[in-house]
Length: 371
Ligand code: MLT
Image 1 (tube, rainbow, N blue to C red):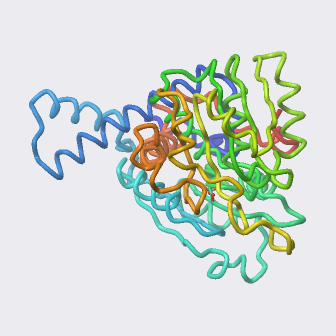
Image 2 (image 1 turned 180 degrees about the vertical axis):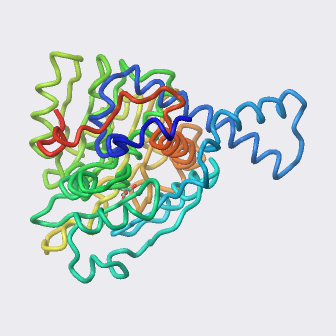
């Protein structure tokens, strides 16, 4: 049975950073598994809500269930949900995902106040102890001035005896969000290369922007347009990484001031809106209170007919709700896709039976950051 084969080094199945998914073929397999999870969910939902499945659909449901359920385990595998920073959709979608593939979940949505972190326990000790209670840990941590989010996630995973899935690390990384983002892009645009992707808003603090850029840069001939005010531009280390990557995959990036947003919108295949992340600007008295740019139906009318609008959510004021009815708005579908993608990722870390193992987490490499 698959779970017996990997007990030696479970840690290597952690998901911390999107740079682990640098091989487009591996990513493709992950997204294909997520597609099957979508089919399983749709058929199950349809059965539960309407009980209206044809015979062929019932056969398919049985087939998918056999393939995708965590039935090789001697007991229900347990996901520990440890959120040291607020979250509703990410934690709920992980919980729903784990239960939909036959697992169990417990945890804390408020680990900052109600766990031993509040008493000053170190990340390493917490990882060692909590790792003894479950089979996979889903963790979100904001990091702090001295311990950037990704470093906390890496230290936690390196000290934990079971796989860790990073559900958001400070302003650094949010790998499961970006995997669901590329799932959405592939579903809507049928490709992950030759794309013109516009990122708009807070590009400095947005971890979803960073981790998605890493994935886009692994595919050929993508162009990234970065639109923000001067205060919220993409950090320098990312721009350097993109320049290094450019000769290999042809990734190009251009920066624009918010005043030029309409030109950018006209050329975009994907418009990725982000909110202002005020929680990371607490020391600043001059931080903006509202988004500098609000996408309205008038702006959307300038976009290509087959372009799409995405947003990691929650939305504050950066997309006018009047845009929601436009068929190009995909942000609510995107959130739903998070369920299927997380079902696939949980399944991958808990079983080798789908043959997807090449994204393994290299703890030594991670300690020096991924290249
Ligand atoms: C995140 O967790 O980073 C969210 O999905 C995006 C946000 O908080 O704005």
